[in-house]
Image (cartoon, rainbow, N blue to C red; front, side):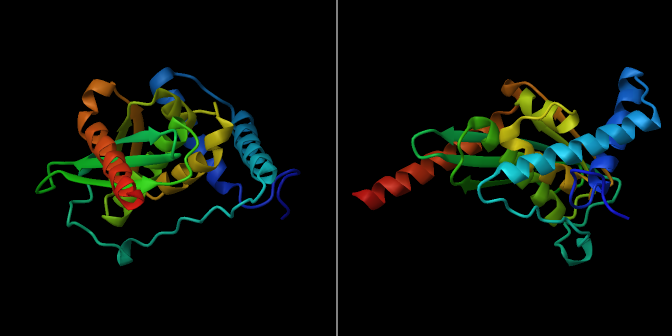
Length: 220
């Protein structure tokens, strides 16, 4: 069976995503969509993503996320345990680099887990925040977490993930996030105040500072 006109590749992830968002709209906002509307929205998202990829000078193949939980390091959590994840990013305009940070908390964890990374060639703060969320969810999968409640203080990112309101600069990263999200038994990605994100915020800033100091030392 050939894919719809203007779409190359698998449309199933987009259809699944629209089914999920339609379910959330029904439960939380009492908004109903017909099967035809739901299918049309899924195909429209797939078509938009294809167009965005074709416009890139050097398009990259989007990696397919597969179930590999048997090969991943599991921290021994109960499958019903829900982990709270927070993410943040600190962006440095002059060097086009970002410090990424994330934390994991849960009753089943012996201690709070946190991680950080430096990302090069980042052209905006929004891209940095999106990459931080993607990195955190990848780490959550690697740790064997099944249920996640993820939080970021960037409302634009949350809207892009949970709705059809897309920003062209992060459409590819959002696609990755949605693919990774499909691997969890349960996941929500929500906005929360910056004042509550002090741990990930501090870690992201410390990460970018240490990177800048290291590079300054190399120049000297």
